[in-house]
Every structure is written in structure tokens, then in C-alpha cells.
Image 1: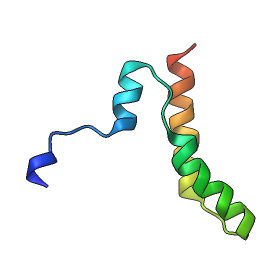
Image 2: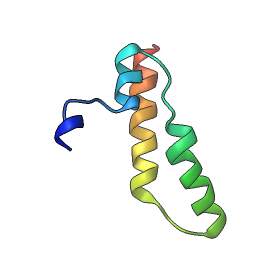
Image 3: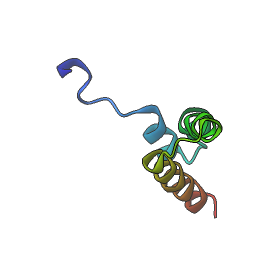
Image 4: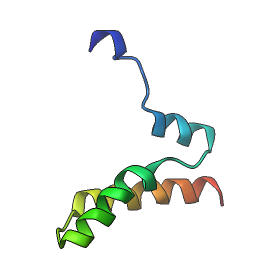
Length: 60
């Protein structure tokens, strides 16, 4: 952990660049699979909403 403690995750790097993140491919897919199985994933849903909100604020 010490070797990577200063690293920023790829989504944070995307947001800092004003780029679209991979949130739909990662957490969005979790939500799609959960929905098909009838499983609620409120934290994943909130995370997607928050990241999409940040993305939208950067592009408006």
C-alpha cells in the first residue's frame, strides 16, 4: 500500500481532466445485474448519481 499511496484512481483522473468516467461500465453494470436479480444496491446507485452529477457539472 505504501508504494501506491500517492496514486489517484482512474475515475478521479478522468474527472480532473474533464473526461467522462467509466462509472457506467463499472457501477452501472453492477446496477443492471442487480436489477435483473431483484436486488437493491442503494450505495452503488448513489455513487453513480454522484459521479454523473460531477461529470454533468464539468460539461455545462
